Image (cartoon, rainbow, N blue to C red; front, side, top):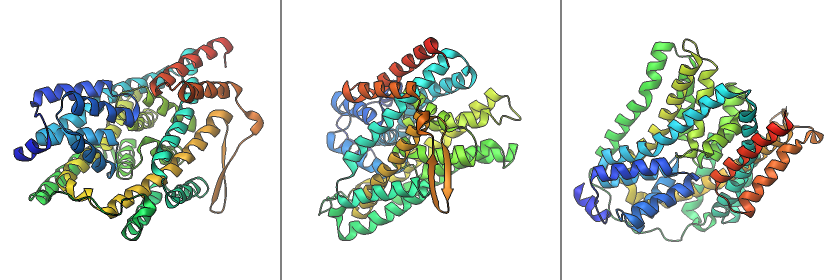
Length: 445
């Protein structure tokens, strides 16, 4: 391990020094995955010179192959690269904890502060910001992912599947992965892949032992809180449902929080009845204001689910436990993937079929985010939206004359800030929250 670390890093820091840097990154990593990855690159590669450019980019490519938040997985991998398992744990945990604590505070404020005019107005403004943010993510990811006609077709098929046929997100991910896997074997160019795979270094000799240890320990750590909740509170308790649902989500969480929101909305709103569509929009807006991965929006969902089904706890205690369960089963798996897969990094780099599957999944995610954009737009701009079904077909019914003019104006202002003035996401959210509160105070309900 020491020799490997010496060859893969340019200046080995002490664990204490690295710990403080990861804590700093965890407290200031606003801006979504792109901003967080850029921040880590500036600090770890440019300033500290702990990892060289090639190793950083290779680590990023590896993390993109796995489910879970890319930036948090990258932090975990870089920590592992420098200090083994303890380094990976420190980097991965510190990347999440500050934002998770902020998100918990915002969730408490949301649950306890509803009905206060200024807070309701701020949440109203945040909804408009979220609509623009999701559209911006759709454009950004689409430009990067849809390089060929086949990838564009996969995105269109994913949109039709989830919007009109209500197909579950995991099924769409699996189908896209299969298409990408088999196409990459015969026509990699159709997926935007290079004709020849990269040459890579041989894998570590003890990779299977490391994989087995990480997998066994990781699975136990992942499942223990769910098992304890089932044993103490019963298998049908909301904490058990939260643990199982978000564990499934962690396995299919390709494409980041924007892609997952459509699946979360489908399950949390329609299947479990934990929250309403506007509350899902509120959760994403709050998550945009926190450091850490945007997927912390799942914590908001878990908090509200437990807060509203609190027995035998008080609502606040249940909400905190629900948030903790959600955070645990969301981020423990992403760290498990890193510790189990890190010994296989070099071979994965040259695996064309796996790269093809990832390219196809990313394309399908664009279609899923388009579905989310339409879903958000309908609920933000028209308020009451009814889901309709005829056989396997699903569509949404709404009254065009019920267009919310205040929401439309705020969304237009948010679009100018994001696309015209190129303000950061956190600036857009804060500005729209302030405008929403002002409109609420001046005009009332």
